[in-house]
Length: 230
View 1 (tube, rainbow, N blue to C red):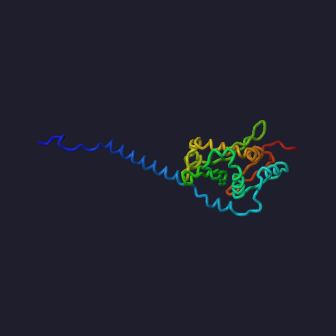
View 2: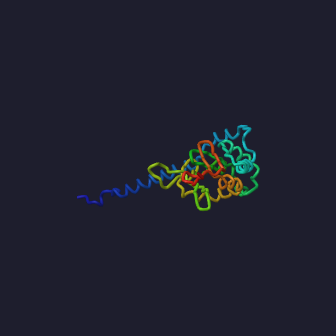
View 3: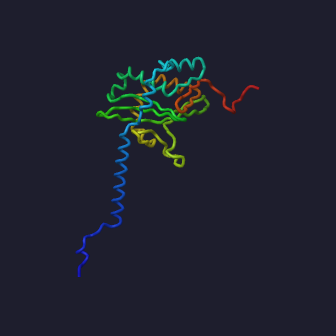
């Protein structure tokens, strides 16, 4: 009679499961890398920024200083900001960004309560984008109102609040923890606009981000529980 050695061994159930898991992992990795390598579509932002808008700010620092000094709110559209960034960065390639020869530009997308700062680079003839989400929070303390920039784009899904969205690698949205890979580049960028960041975020009493625009107000408004003279 034939014994078991006469028949080829068949893979067991555990081996099949492991093979299936490895296959799924490899497919998932390939899909992730594909979307990370696909740049965001910036054509609409670039087209809008190329328009000749007479009200586009030439000097953002001057616009913010005037609003603070005279005590009135100022609204800036997404297009105005991107026009100013494009014009400003053309003349500053020799600064901190000189270390990154592939740097092509910075773009801003504004949505409800969230801003997305997008960096565009060219690597070996291919365009790549990375981005970071941020929100603005105001905290009242003994020493006054403090503005905090939160690197948080909100939850991936309302039922899954953690981890929050941090930014994008290409067209791939990544969790907040991945921002550590982007911080050095964004810190270099921040040094170019240190004065504008100080005026626009730290000197303003109210910052409201909406779809397509941001409104900055230097006027201090008392809260609903503030003590008012009778």
